Image (cartoon, rainbow, N blue to C red; front, side):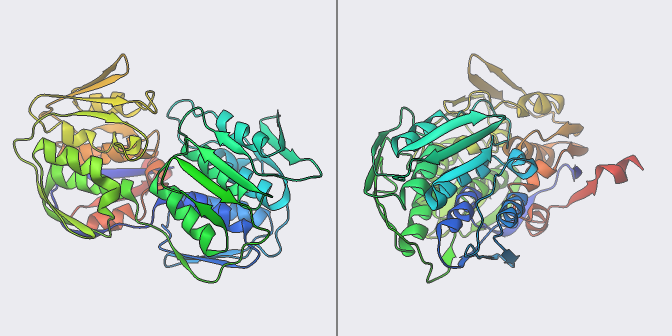
Length: 425
C-alpha cells in the first residue's frame, strides 16, 4: 500500500482537465466481450480498476492493450472460464461480467464482488432480472452461478423494486443479445448508462430509452464495432476538483466537463455563495468566501450524486453555520468522519444525518483512506489544515482518480506518494 503526504495551506490555481468516467469505463470494458470484433475505447482513465479489469480479461483469453488513454480489447478468441479470485474480490464493478458473460455464452460463474466498503449493496435486483430473462441463478461457495435452459435467454418485462445502476447495467448487458424484447422499468438514468447504451447501439444493438426510467432492448444476434468509442467525462472527478477549488482555490478552470451532468452539484455551490462561470464544456471557480451552510440530500440521477457527498465535505467546513448531508442511497458511507474528526473537523453522524460545522482549527495528522471518495475527501481537508497530513491506504484514492498527483501539480499543489515500506525504513 502507498501513503500520500500533503502539506497544508497550499492553494489551487490554474487548469485541470477531467478524464473519462470511471463508472462508465468499468461497465464498458465487460461490455466489450459481447462484441464479435475487436473494440477500441478513447479517453480511458489510467486507474487501478482498469488494470484489474484487463487482468480479468486476460484470464478469459481476451488480450487488451492500454496506452495514452486508448484501450484496445480483442474478444474474438474469448473462453468462458470461471471468474472467482483476487481481481474479482478487489473490484465491485467486476460483477458486470455476470451480465456480459450471460449475454455472450448463456452462462457465467463469477465470484462475489468486492470494492469499496460503504455499506450493503445487495445484488438481489440483478438476480431478479437474470431470472426474468430465463436464467437459473444459484449462489454457491462465495460465487454466483448463472446458466440458461437450452432455449437460451428471452425478452421479458422487468420492474426493479429500487433504482439500481448496477442492476440496470447488468440486465442491459444480458438482454442485448437475448431473443425478443426486454423492457426495464424503474431503470436508473445515470449518464454512464447512456454512455454504455451509445456504445452498444453503435455496434448494432437496439436500445431505446437509456437516460429515462423505461429502457427497451430488442435483442440482436451479433454486435460489431466499427469505430472508437470515446468515454464521457467523469462527473465525480469534476465535482471533486470544483469543491477543492471552491474551498482552497485562487482561480481554477475545470475543463472537459458536461455541465448538465453536474446541475444539482453546481446548484449547491451557488447556494453556498461560490462564484462560478459555467461555460459550454468548462467551469471556472474563483473560490469561496463568506459561504452559507446548505442541506444536501443524495438521490439517484438527476439528483445529487452519493459519490460527491464526501468530496464536498471540506468545503462545507468553510461555511459559517451547520450544514447537513442525508445520504439516502448509502447511509453507512461515513468512514471519512472519524478520520476528519482526528484532524479537528467538526463533523458527526447521527440517525442517518451527517452534520458539518465551520471548522477553522484543522491540524494535519495521520489518517486512513478506507475507500475512494472518503480518501479523496481527506485530500481536500489536508489542503485546508495546518501542518502535514499523511494518508495511509492511498491506493484506494488512486483506484478512482486518474493521475491525481500530476493533476494537482498542474494546480500548484504538491502531493508526495511513497510506499509504506519506504516510510518504515
